[in-house]
Length: 98
Image 1: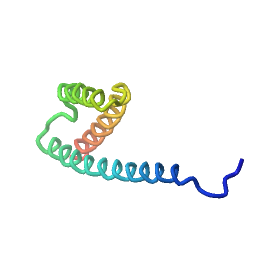
Image 2: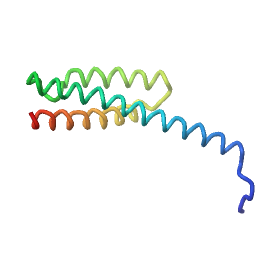
Image 3: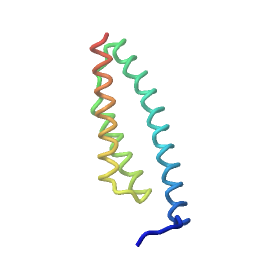
């Protein structure tokens, strides 16, 4: 069955999803601007690229936030681990460029 008229309810949901996606991208961009500065600082001061203790504390904190927000905490952990891994990669690159 082909619809000739767009479904206004579906269009409204999709518009909200598009807005959220845009906000997520902007938030990630801001986060990576800050973590880039952290990586440059770490490289300049000869600090290690990763901080396993902080990473584990962050993961535990964000798992709790996910639970409180009724988001699957396993998904939340996978998401933040992906970000952390990318940040560490950037920090390693900053240290190597030093």
